[in-house]
Image (tube, rainbow, N blue to C red; front, top):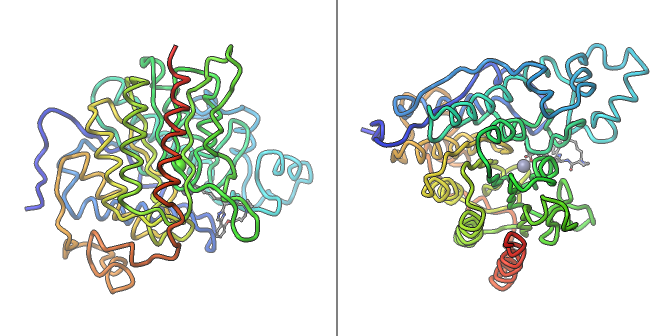
Length: 400
Ligand code: ZLV
Ligand code: CA
Ligand code: ZN
C-alpha cells in the first residue's frame, strides 16, 4: 500500500549497527544518537526495509581508522574514559591538543566513545565497500557524516572522519570522487583532508557569517573565495567549492541553487562516484541551524544527485530536532528506493508520540517546517545570483 516494491535496475543498501543508538553525549548536548532510533522506526514502519538490502556492519578496527587518522590520536581516543579523564595531569595536555575540553565542550568524553566512533565509521566503510564491489548502486549510512573531524583532532561533535575514510576506500577504484555536503555547517574536515588532490572535489553548502555579537557561525570557514590551494603546482587547485549562505534560505532558492551549482560541478568534473552528506540541520526549525527548508526540499538534493545514475554513498551528519531528522532520513531512504510515502504516519509506529501533537508535526511525515520560522530570509535574489556567478567563475579553474 505504501509502494514498497523493489525497483528494477538499481540496488539500494542500508548499513546500520543499532548499537550506535545507545551512546550519550550528555543530557544538554544537542547531538542525540537516539535520533537514529526514531529514523529507523519510521523506515521500518513504512516497510522500506523490503526495498533494500540491510547490513549490520562490524565496527572499524584501529588499523582501518589509521588509514586517515594519526595513531597517537587514535590511541588517546581509545584509552580515555570519563573516569580516567582527570586522574592523569599528563592527559590534560593531550585533551587540549586533540580538540577536547577547553572552554568548548563540543566533543565530550563519554562512555563507550571508542565503540561509538568505530561503529559509525565501520558502517561508512562497509557502505563504500558495497559500492566498490557493485553490490549496491546507492549505499546508505545515516549514523555517519561526521565531517569536522581532523586527522589528529576532534571538532564540532566529530571524533573520527568516517567520510574521509569512505572516500579513501572509494579512491582505490575510482579516479574522481565528488563530495557534496548539505549540512548547515561547512564540511571543513573533508575539504582539508583532500585539499591537495585532484581526485576528490569537495562542495559544501552552509551558513556562513557573523552573528550580532560578532561570532562566526561554526566552524567559521567556507567563504566563496576559499577555493583551496592556489599554488598552480598543487594538484588540488580548483577542486574545492564553497557556497556560503545567510539565515533563512527557503525551499525554492535552495533547490535552484543546488541544482544549478551541483549540476555544473558534475558536468565539469565527471565524477565516477558521489558521496552526499545529508546533514538535517539545514531544515527549518532545527535547534542549531538557521535555514528554513522543508523535508521535500532537502530530499530534492538526493533526488537530483540520484538522477545522474552515478554510484552514490549517502551519509547522515548534523540534525538537532530529532523528529525532523528522522522524517528527513526516512523520506530520503524512500527517494533512493523509488517509493512514495503516505503523509499520515503509520498507526503502528512505535514512538508515534514523538511525531504527534501540533508542535511535533501533527502525526504527519511532511509537516510544514516553514511555519516554525525563526530566522528571516537574508538571502536576496540578487545575492544568490551573484553567488552563483562567483561559483561558476571558481569552476573555471577546473579547465586546462
Ligand atoms: O552538525 O555546544 O560554536 C556535524 C555538524 O556539522 C561552537 N561549536 C564552539 C566554538 C566555541 N563554541 C561553543 C562551544 C559550546 C559547546 C557545546 C553546544 C551545546 C548546547 C547547544 C549548542 C551547542 C553548540 N555548539 C552549537 N554550535 C556548536 C558548535 C559546534 C557545531 C557542530 C556541528 C556538527 C555533526
Ligand atoms: Ca555543508
Ligand atoms: Zn551541522
